[in-house]
Amino acid sequence: MAVTSKVAKVQVTLNGSGFGKPSEVSYSNDGEISLCHLTYPAGLNNRFKALKSDIFRVYVGLDDYPDIPQFTGHLVKESGINTTSMELVGSLNRAVNDKRFVNDYDNFDGQEIGTAIASVFSEVSELSWMTMMNEITDPVVTVPKGTRFTNGISKYDLMRTWRDMAVNPADPLHISRYTLFQHGDYYFFRKIPKPADTSPWAELAYGDTLLHMDPESSVRFAYNKAVVIGKDGVTGEFQNDHRIAVDGLAEADILSNSEIPNAGEAHDTARATVLSDMLDQTGLIVNSHLLLEMIPNVSVVEITGAPFGLSNKYLVRSINLHVSESGTFIATAKVNIPVDALSNAMSQLLNVSGSGSASLALQ
Image (cartoon, rainbow, N blue to C red):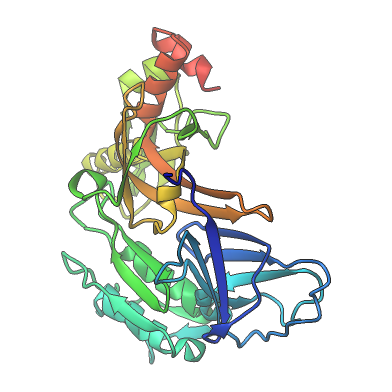
């Protein structure tokens, strides 16, 4: 007889050795430092002891364990198990409390961004057991001269600062960004893939529970007008008339920058501000067991058969896994869809037409 269901399997190791099996697991990863919550059966709270220096690895699979753990990290507090639960945080948390000074005598001026990140990572002594895998920026982006943190900065924040600088200078919308992430015992710096040009990690057929709209704001998501003031008061502005007609006026805060030399560049900056914000994304929740081993900002999923034009390739932005005490397994991911696609989808969903009604549907 064919088996129509899968069994969730969980394994926890401590420094590479077997550890007690939890009755419930919750894992979340938003592309930064992951979190994991383990719950153990009542009465076993004196059975285990763990220190913050210990390395936990949590494997979650269906019918079998994965080769690489979904979570690798350590205790938030060094207290062993005083209750029936344990709070764990990803290994990169070690670099959050590890500070560094960047001054005129010790700096990264002119270094390629990926190389600078690898250099900072190598200085975190508590992460010596991890391996750094970095990708050289293309086109090459270097640390600007004069970048200083004389009052100190955490090594993790410093790596994120370099990451945020790693954009194509010829791309005013900053679409070609990079990501930092942990995967097992490895730490990666690499370019975020463009969904349209990437083979999907999984193909998800639309169903009643696959998709769920999850707007993160009660107001319109994108600016459609921006005003920029440059040197000597020169002014440039840009507005998207179509989006203003659909959504009503949504103006960004006025940007004042004395380094903008003329009205033409002020206009270009205003235009880039509007277009960049219109390309900002909003959350769409996807539910499928095929998301189990996805990596935020790296994995691409393709949704097929969805209504309202939502069938497309999407970049996974965050992952949540939960295995309950009864064995129920839930895997969800938040993917990003362009603001305009959401607006059109919501209009069709509510069977509205005309520019004014679409705005009301989202407010």
